[in-house]
Picture (cartoon, rainbow, N blue to C red):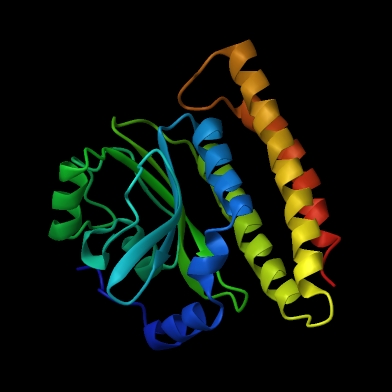
Length: 233
C-alpha cells in the first residue's frame, strides 16, 4: 500500500511555508511555464501544484479555470510527493501502479481526468513542493523522451523559484533584480512558445510528441537554462 505521507513531511511543510511558494508561483512568469507545457505536450490542461498539509493548491493553471485547490487526498499530485519522483498514468481509469487512492480515483472520474503526468518541483532547499503536471480528458501514450523533457521543464521552474527567493532576499535592489530577471525569462519562454507553435504548424499535432520535435525544443530550452545559470548571484 502506498504511504500517505513522505518521511520528512514536517520538514517539507516548514520549508514550503518559509519560502512563500503560493505567492511566488502566482506570478506571471510561472503562468508562462504552464502555457508552454500544455502547448508542447498537446494537452488541454497544465498546472503547477503546491501540496500543502490538507489541500493541494494550483497557483498557475491553464485549462481548468476556477480549479484553485482540492483536498490533498483527492489529488494525483500527492502521489509524486509521497514517492519523491515523477508519476505518469497513461489511463487513470485502468492503471494501478503507482497505486491511486480511492478518493483520488473518484475525483479524477468526476473531473473527467484520464491522463496524468506530474514532474516534481523542488524548493530552494531541494525538498519537493508539488508538481508541474499535464492532464488530458482522454487516455494517451507518454514516452520516456516526453517524461524527460517534462522533468527538465520542471527543473527550470524550480530554478526560477530559487532565483526569485535569492533576488527578494537582497534588500538593496532585490525587487528590481527580480523584475528584470522575470521579464527576461518571460521573453525566453515566449520564444520557446513561438518555436512550439511553429513546429506544430509545420508538422501537425502528433501524440506522442515525436523525438525530433522534442530535440529541437530541448535545444532552445538550454538557452533558458543559460539565463538562469547566469543569474546565480
